[in-house]
Amino acid sequence: MSFYETFLEMIFPKNLKCRVCGRESNESHYSICASCVRSIEYINPPFCLKCGKPLEDDSLRKCYECKKHHYHFVEARSVGTFTGVLKKAVYRLKYKKDVYIARPLAVLMAESFKHLDWPEADIIIPVPLSNSKLFKRGFNQSYLLARELGKLLKLKVSDRHIIRVRDTDSQTKLTRAQRWENMKGAFEVFKKEALKGRTIILVDDIFTTGATVDECSRTLIEDAGVKEVYVFTLATAKNIT
Image (tube, rainbow, N blue to C red; front, side, top):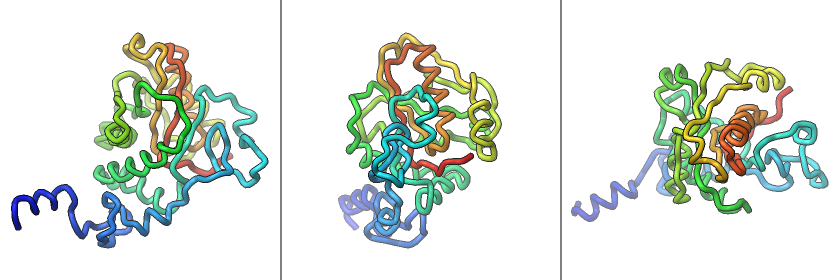
């Protein structure tokens, strides 16, 4: 194999195993195979114009939760629902420590982002983890997604402007009301002057109730004078009670 062929193999490796299903495929979409990409339950209209969750009735503009609750972010959108391929991918990223899957997932996010009618953003900020969870996991999955997305969109990414100042309980087993209470006062902003008047894209892996991203948004707007926050996540979960 020539040097040129070796170089091409490094950039465009052949016979990659799909990081989701494990099958080898020459159609590998940055190491997620074409079959898995096609099977994603993408979010298409009708969906809530505020949080982006799918709606069954195309005559509705907002879901029930968004009608009764005030969110601080302008809009939230996701690539697809937290089922099937995306659910497996997030599991591999967070719990199997497959950090390399962040790149193909960010590619999917970037392709979806192109269809959003959002104003030009100044910076991408990932939702931060607590120090204890960051130490235990070894990385922040939201930062990995944001970092790769920033490269693809050619936008600045920073994980130094907002931090989680207290260890919140895991949101996984909490009710909707408990999730909102759990996140109150969880974040703090640094270098506020650099964010004043800016438009921010807040990136997370999953949108469930919106409690986490909304508290981040509130903190950025009220404490740092951020102009607008738009939330972009890989997946959105079904509503919980």
